Every structure is written in C-alpha cells, then in structure tokens.
Length: 68
Image (tube, rainbow, N blue to C red):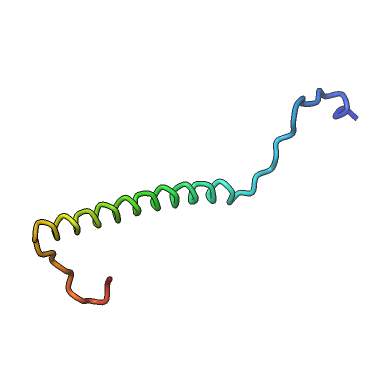
C-alpha cells in the first residue's frame, strides 16, 4: 500500500547487461589492438629482410626446433 505513494524514478529504465558483455567488449578491443601491433611488427620484419638483402647481410635463421 505504501509503495504506491513512493515517488517513481523518471526517465528510461536501466537495461540489464549480461555480466560477460563487459569482458567480451574488453577482449574485443584488446584483440583489435594486438592485431594492429602484429601487422606493424610483420611490416617491420619484412622491411628488415629487404634491407638485409639489399645490403648483402646474411640473416640468422632460428634452429629448427619445431617452431616456425
């Protein structure tokens, strides 16, 4: 009975967010950031390879231990 007399909050109601939604957004942003850094690193490595070929500097290759 008294609850009908209490003032109602105005405006839009807060939407209920899924608890994993914030973590999902954070992981998506981090994934995008890391993808950008990976592309930059690959570009730098390609440039270094080309410069070493032009200058005739032999590149050291990692030993074959199963990692590419």
